[in-house]
Amino acid sequence: MQVVTVMILLLLCKVSDFKKTRNRSLRNNERDRTLRKSSSTVKRNAPGLPCDTYTYLHEKYLDCQERKLIFVSADWPDDLKHMLLARNRIRKLKNNMFARYKVLKSLDLQQNDISKIESQAFFGLHKLTTLLLQHNQLKSLSEEVFIYMPMLNYLRLYDNPWHCNCELETLVTMLQIPANRNLGNYAKCVHPIELKNQKLKQIKADQLCGEEERQDPQSIRKEKPEAMKPEFDSSLCHMYVFPVPTLNCKRKDLKKVPGNIPPDIIKLDLSNNKIRQLRAKEFEDVSELKILNLNSNGLAYIDPAAFSGLSNLEELDLSNNSLQNFDYGVLEDLYFLKILWLRENPWRCDYNIHYLFYWLKHHYNVHYNGLECKMPEEYKGWSVGKYVRSYYEECPKDKLPIYPENFDLDKDDEEWERHKESVQTVKKHGVIVTVIG
Image (cartoon, rainbow, N blue to C red):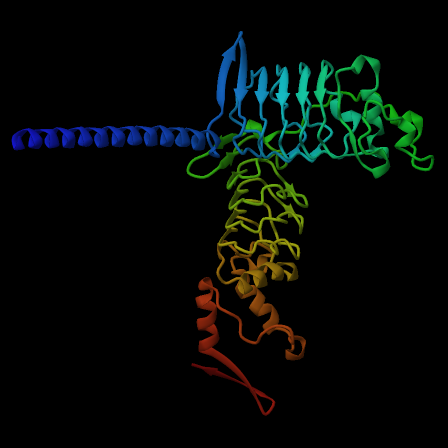
């Protein structure tokens, strides 16, 4: 009897162990499935992932939805027929942004943060039939934006905070043309309060403008402008993602800084072009830029506000250009600049060079080279630092209140300092005595 009891107990223990092992295995399998699912979800929504390109019914699609994009990439194929950019973070559509996509039929931009569309943003989209702009932040839009899409027959504009005022009149007039029955359906006014929830397709034009605001009727209905060749677009440059986001526009025969530079670019190479001058706010949309190369452009003038907004710039190459001096203010926004290349420029040593010299003196952490006088002939070959010190040593002392008596030394001014130490001039009892040390 005892033997039977022991055997029954052993059998029960084995059954219990089997159940525990089985449950543990089931739990592990469930956890693995959960992790795989979670990993798949993270991967799908992770920023920086490449977009999916595929062909369906002989037409090429680009699926770049939910990629946290803020710009149109330069490496997408030109022969796309359908572009899906929904649920990203695009805020602004700039001129010529889609100019390369000549055969594009549909463009899905819904659920972004778009608040501004420039007048030639859709230049070149002559075959576009479908445009989705719903669920964005658009307040105002002109009919002019749609002129470059003559085949457009399906447009969605709802769930935007439309401000129904005089600026919206041309768009409302366009939407209410009978032939445009599929354009802008369901879009409603949000402001002013008295027009809230009224559909753009139904609102009367005289509700948008008072008599004093109304434009000349001839100016409201604009003639279709002559198609213009777009400015050089950054999409023609080469873009690299590794090791850092880089836009290479080297040797592109550029005469000005290209438009539509992706805002997350870290390194921008504009060397060996024909950019003779930099205008104000040339780089205002690329505030993340850390390295800017403008070498060999024949650059002769830089507007004081040209580098406005480049507070993260660390390296600036201006070598081998035609610069003679800097206007006051050119470098003021470059708070974190570390390296400034200045060699092979015809620096003119006169009073106008002082701003550059003193800016560098007060920003001692900025490493620079090539600041050497090329003109006038009497100072040719001098370092700019040597010239500036000689300039003030020739002035009466009462003319020097705003400059320190002792200047920091340039590394390339050792010969000048040795000369000062070896020859001292002392004015004593009206007689000049030269003491040689």
